[in-house]
Length: 252
Image 1 (cartoon, rainbow, N blue to C red):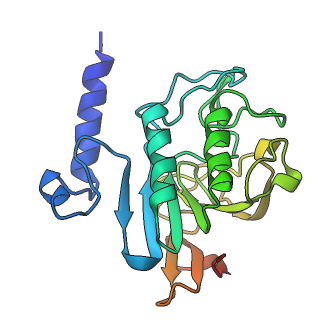
Image 2: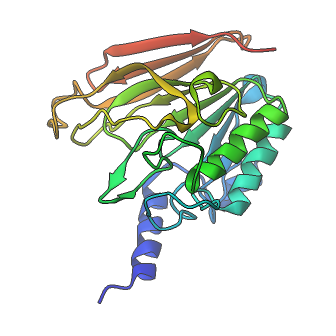
């Protein structure tokens, strides 16, 4: 019988050896990286703070997501950390890198893999944890927050607004999805209406299209003007063609 804890520990070690995340020696130099923890804050001057999340380690088991109590996608410690670091940030732009999508429905049989539960009503289960974060961003008037998302196998731009949502206690925001750079394609997935998402753009290739093709494997590129006055997002396929671009100016 396989031991899940052993497999998880080996998988985590392989991931950290493969991914370009600094070790403990870098911690003393203020890089924001920590070897014992995947979620982290990376400061990039006056105009950018990146808050990279870990939506796997603390995630509860997959269920239909209909619980009336808050269930974990980030865990309590990470949720509090994210809200605290967003409040402390003095950077013009606060980018949240989330490895699972916010409003996309990602089925796992009869259960749900991601945050959404395929119910367009009030938040339930994992959605309650996201609702708490979005409400804190509004309550503390945290400006210029953008979400960058991976996991699914296509690219998209989503705008979320309380005007369209069942849950209304949050500020409008954008989420950009890009992936994967080296795997087959599928999608697009349906959206859950709880937080009022709208598709501004999406592009998906034929199911399981060859990763060698490159037309339907994607990555994202963000550039910030020297004075912080423009934030430009591009979605680019693996052949180097930009399929989408949007530029924002900051809220002051």
